[in-house]
Length: 351
Image (tube, rainbow, N blue to C red; front, side, top):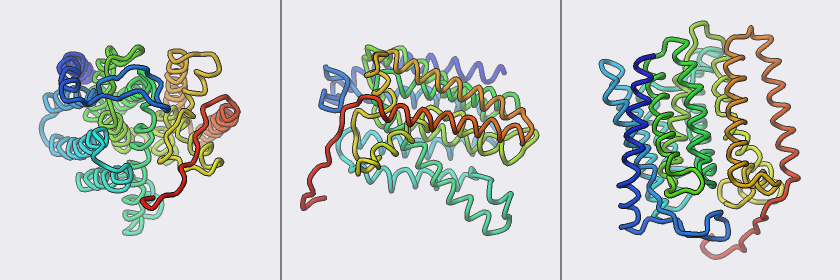
């Protein structure tokens, strides 16, 4: 507990402090997010806030983690650094979005695999070489999917950082209860860095984290999910608990994917104001109310994950079926909520 608390405090203070010079630097080099048709802000806002979050997590983890675990930390930070760099280059307009999705994110996942971090689902069920290959493929799909989901979640003041902080809190709690010191420290560091940044990012935001920060948080969320283990393991808890902890962002991504696919749009390549938070805001909650509602969804989903981790398999499956049913009902309800519709761009010679 002491290590987790110290990790939280170091990351909190570092992120809170670093955001000020990072904001000044972003303004000086012209890294700002300008208002536009698919934006909710009306004035240019500095980007690069992800650098402060990155600094908070890295300082905290490198200061506290020693011994053999430090080698794995270097692997995690290596993948995280790659993903943050790709995100910053995308923020600068130097990369096509397909590069980060089909090159940057998979490469970061491969770095995790080389560090010994992977899913352990098929190796438990199938075993042997086949199970290892399937788990490696699942690891890449998981890392890319969760990283991308956080990338598209960063569209409203305080949303991405707050949802990540909520998930990190549950990862830290479950890791502590199951005696995982490294995961506890890493999750607590993410929680602290996200909370420190929220001081400057909650509405009205003075700085945005940008894709570099959102992808960095998403990558670490995926990593925490892969690292989380239980003292009395079972296949249901091993896979479903991380999904539930990340329920808020998975819910939003599911809604966007279904909604855009039904309209003939590419889910991750057609940005717009049709996310869960946009729809909630349009229903009368406003931006703050919508963001707080997403926090609440994350809290409820995380609490359910905590419950599932303690239940026998049969009861856990019932709880998960209930959660899936509730989530799909929520998707169906929000699908009918008002939002600003995107239009498909006509094909061009460069498409």
